[in-house]
Image (cartoon, rainbow over all chains, first blue to last red; front, side, top):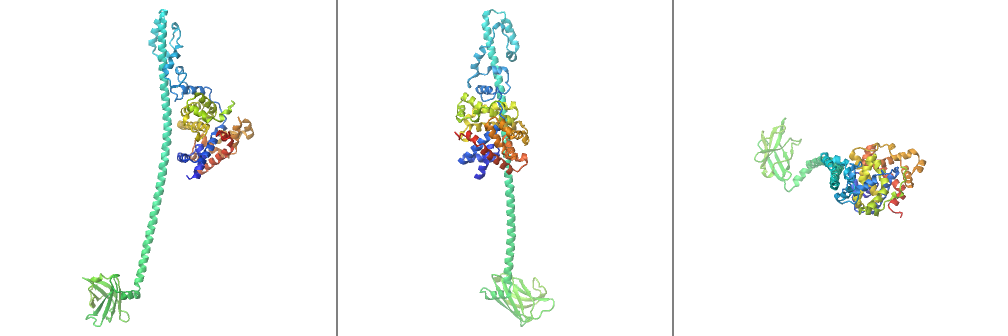
Length: 368
Length: 202
């Protein structure tokens, strides 16, 4: 997000409606220190904080405050007491004041006021529940007949009994609370984990989107590259064609071959088959092109052609030709063998279309 | 709801939170008095069930007691902090339970804001518990219905703008714009309130 977008997100952020990612972005922007944005955000937060005032205010439940204050001062003040008080005994033993004071110290004074006169002693409702009844009746029964002097001992033992009951009730309460807290914490952890998982899922989605975007871009690039290649090949073709055209223009090419200081020349003389005939060959070593010109050869019978051979260790065809009206023969030679290896040139008469190897009589021959 | 709303609930002083952070129970009691009507209303609106709301409110206040030292005045007013905390706990609770107190429909018929419309503007003036409420109602009334709906869904249902977009089947950009425009208008309309809240008028 750029700054304008961040600024625009502030109202959404204040309302708590941004997705986690943009929200983090806003937070880090604010943390980096941007007084205008901070000021704006406070205005929006102030506005959002006013929204609930639009609701018809209701009064919190009457007992809630007292309950909260009690929970505040309970030994495990971190935890809210359940809305439904767990058991009457639990309320009985809750230390009335000050957090962080061990409960047991608070208990003795509390129970001291409770024990009834010894001869009217009845196990309390709590005691009936929490203690095994079998232990109690014999004691109370036998005590009823004892002299008054022993009622003190009875009071003491009842006091001990109640202390035990209280302790056990407190233990139950603490266990219940611990479980409740654990449950609430588990639920919160679960909710958090769910949020995190969906966050990760979103990130994965985004990465996959990015990847497929990158892939399609790559494909496009490859396609473009392919097109470029094809164009390049076409251009090369054109260049070659142009070059060929240029080289292929006989007059220019002959002139070039003649004028090249590197060109080599051979003169060919007629054999017995054509005693008056003669010919010349010019070859240009670097382009391996050449020009052949022959005169005074006998006219060709139908279905025959003259074929020029460059002879290295074996004859290699250098082209076929027929005679023009002036009985002249010309060949523009291409792709002669390595000029340094050519020993001679020769001309033979061959069936129309020529042959890979000479088959007919030789009419002209000469060393290079 | 006929109980008089304490005027003091408009603002919680930052130093009160500081005293709570220091373990001052009297300060905490005062903070409770000042903020609980609003938080209770808010939490009930989101959770939708009175017993559940009371239970949650207790958790919220105990968290306030424990975490008052986390409050940072630089990041907003105490009331904004309390409202944010209560709102997010309530939304967490609703989400964790997988249920919503109020109908999840986007219909404004369920929302208090539309109650307002139904009863007519003049009646509202009379019904408003105090000036603050009258001002807020007035500000809400100036919003087009769709903008108010977006605000409701964001604020009370705890939906992100992406979720609202999905819920209403309206393009994301449109939702963002609606919320932004609505918040701008509310900010302007409620300026006296948040200025007081931010302590700018003192």
